[in-house]
Length: 199
Image (cartoon, rainbow, N blue to C red; front, side, top):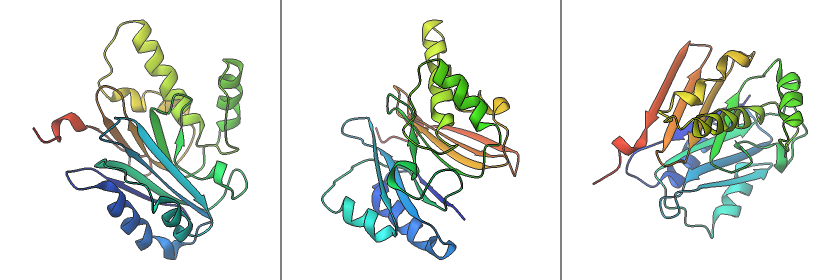
């Protein structure tokens, strides 16, 4: 069973995410990963590892990711083999959106086929990867129309996705956003992190 962790605030996200993932290890998993909005570059740093959480920790030992906004995930394979390319978080092609999910997207193949016809290249065999690509497509449309993204874009595509799942999305655009979509609980929350940043 997958485990999901998210962090926002003033403290460094990396140790908090690792601590949260360690608390979820009892659930069983085959890979682990994190994505943090790096406060120095304002870009998402995404790191994944196959196997135990200690493999991810070893990969991160030399990295100093300074961000305070991040997501983490332990995965139990449903779509795609248990290997690094299928570990969460998954990103869009520009690397500005990262998603973790616990659940199955029933219509992912249909969505994936449509996105591939539009020229989107997938890097994993998972169903989750359709989500960041759908969000990026929506953001591109808003940009072309000169419309502002207020964060609701993170769930604009929810009606197209047929699933009972819990997912968390982070977006590193000019306004940092995080969305929590708990379809089991019928809860949708969008947080604009600009309100939480220290002045």
